[in-house]
Image 1 (cartoon, rainbow, N blue to C red):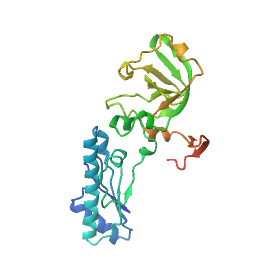
Image 2 (cartoon, rainbow, N blue to C red):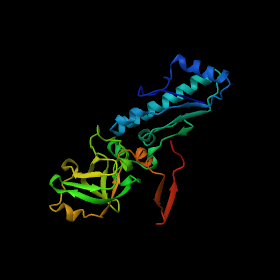
Image 3 (cartoon, rainbow, N blue to C red):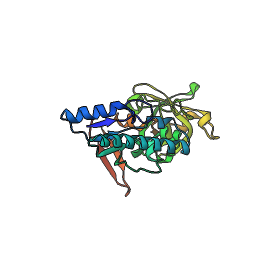
Image 4 (cartoon, rainbow, N blue to C red):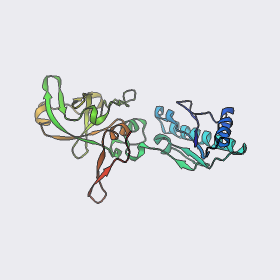
Length: 254
């Protein structure tokens, strides 16, 4: 049994200096549970946007969790595990003294939320959804694809960030970003791609949309939140370092 520690006043857990920490630890230990340690997740790191702020949050996360472990041990309670972890802090920590485990998750794939925070670029995002063009609404400047929210999820994690990528960043089938093109709308099985000039980096939409995006053209979509998108699928097609293709089944479902 691990006790969750609140190191950033963001969501849940017991503050490191709270008297409740020792009470809970003793209740678990004396009640027959196996108290194995403490864990925390610095969710507030998702609001950071500079290397300095990320490093400070990483230290706050580390120090708070280590302090909680020290208090439990001083009270005669076991605390072998000190587990921290959020992707922004895992990639920004300057020291991990006293930590036994880093439990970050989305850094395996990265995503557009992480791009906005500044811990990766779009070229680092390993997860994408392959989709095909199925139609157009030329008067609206829309390209329709066969991947909607059932493929991408309803997560709009970049909506409150500096760059809003909608339901995903559009790439060609090799993964090269098409500047300005995002999935701006999503129905269950249909996605709406449109051009956002604020993300275009000087690019302009093509004069002939149907010629640039013919029916059947394959595209890739980078997700705002890789965890939510990956959870939509039962497995993944993986391009390996040697160029081979592997099929990885998803090992759990809700």
